[in-house]
Image (tube, rainbow, N blue to C red; front, side, top):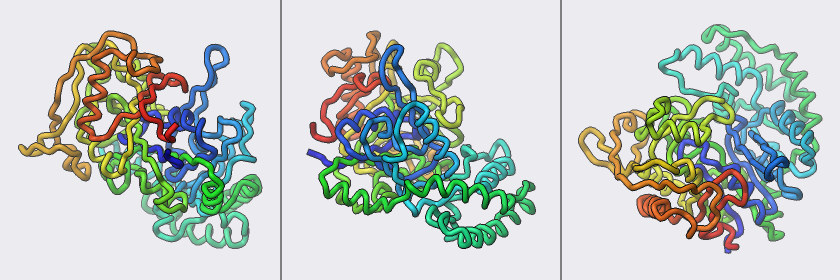
Length: 440
């Protein structure tokens, strides 16, 4: 039996982690968010029929919709205090008690107005052809300040004079860049200070030592779920750099970003779409046309409703990339896979799986490191027969069409990781369980 589970995206994000975290929370007493910021989005569909509710979360851990579950935001998260407060208010309007169950690390770096302004101004300066495709929410500049040792953190909010002194120093630097290099407007220190101080009083009751809280919860016997954002191929070290996010999205970050030892992480679940998607710029070897109605990519885009939760941009779609998944499996040390959105492939007569690449005349079976090499990769495909039957909502393995089972078994073989869960719809009971991560 596994006690603590880490949920990781194995592709370029948007794999359906929110639904799986929510489903797994049936067996957990706490959910921990350990990296990223409000540039990530999780969509949860709760209930059925007229009572069905949809929740879109960015910072608050997905376990919040489960009554009594503790939720933790670890030090690896960059925090936009204003956005967090808005998200909490939205959940409270839906009748969900948040403040008594949510704890925020005092070590979270704060996303401030100058970070957002820098993020947007840099993308404009790069021009359309060289844009990274950031969400413009200040995530990257905040992580930069953290590494440069000039970030203001949550704990600074509770010492106004110290906060003011640090803010003045950091704005002296960033306002110079904004006005003299990026041609943007400076940030007013008085406005930022007033805003931050008002947010401090709202956050204060929720701030706690997350490392200590997780240690005590683990010691008392609680099952814990560690929730990642984005996906492995967007990891700042291991993804298609520079078309990546600004944090580590891999399983190992659960340790550093929550302040726990790696021995606390018992099972690593990799969430994986039955096909592949990507938002924003960067190479994508198995990409398909999503605009032509007769192309499988069009079905993936429309039937899969592939629109970014945060960005609202259309996601690029393509065939399943087993070579990319193979790298993700090794980086994360995956225990098992959860395949999502299988039903999106219903009715496609012939499916293709990218098993490797032709890279400058050499066959490679794993995604290369860095965007430049990945951009030169020509996919090598293996063809499998599709199925005409409807798989939506099926919750038993034996009820899946034979060709769907064969497809999943082939993914398992190519990725060298067992498929433990198959998600066939957005609701909790639309799930096939072959092996439960918590050992139930």
